[in-house]
Length: 189
Image (cartoon, rainbow, N blue to C red; front, side):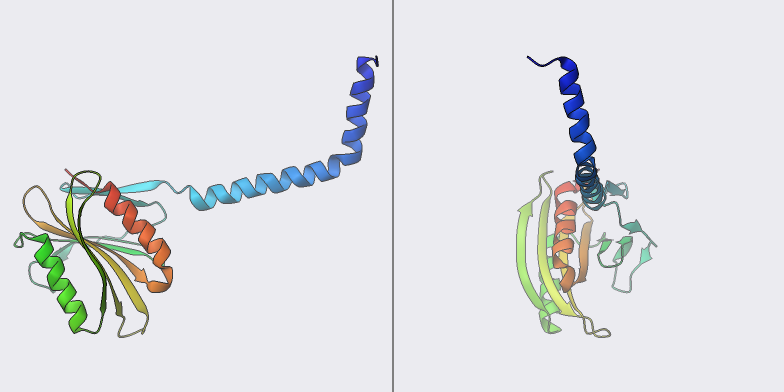
């Protein structure tokens, strides 16, 4: 039976001969793990206005400027954005039916040559009844096809909220993922 020193010398000799390839392989593994970690592990950020709370991707920025919108009785609550995905949060204290609000949006989209992709009434994981739709319209200025994921629901005081996640249809996968995150995390305070 060989001595323990024999195995030590064998390992050292193998390391000396193969360390270049081992270092290359280890370097590639570390680089792959680091790159995938940066791309996929964004911390979620929470938005709240005191009535509703939801989470959104951490690479988005809340650039909210509140105030009345030009559309009657709608109040802008939040505008959250990054270069290609946007979230608008609005509320209207004078409307009390989320599904009728959604249906009015659908009619408006159709009247302006847009397309209603889907219409839903569902309850999110936190028990909030949400009337939703997915619509597309063409931006009249840029001629880019935009896709909108809209959620309509009531807060505890009865005000109707509209949360819209939208952007260029070419980014639909990312927009859809963001809308799912918003929908699933939506809570009433």
